[in-house]
Length: 97
Image 1 (cartoon, rainbow, N blue to C red):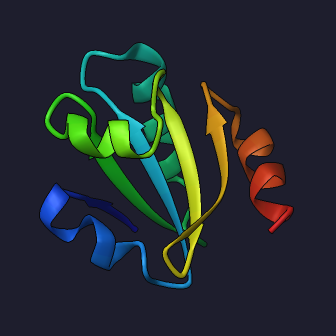
Image 2: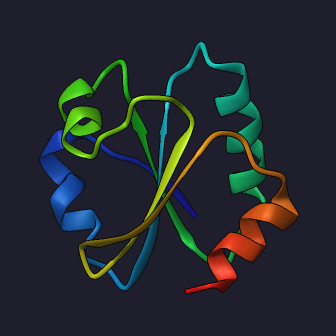
């Protein structure tokens, strides 16, 4: 399931068990491709943050390039991946946790 976040609900939403946050922008080609891959991932909660609309969140989490994926567990950042990944790369990246 994919949910779009705003600054007001970000901290609350990342408190859930495992949450994958996709920092993206609408104009970003690799972000669009990553979004399509994430839509096919049913086994994890995916939250999306538009960096153009929420630059403070991007700065707070050190997002310098997009797409950036950050995996959280109970509100704590576990790992970060910058750039486009294939579905199999993403699945392997997630399996490590």
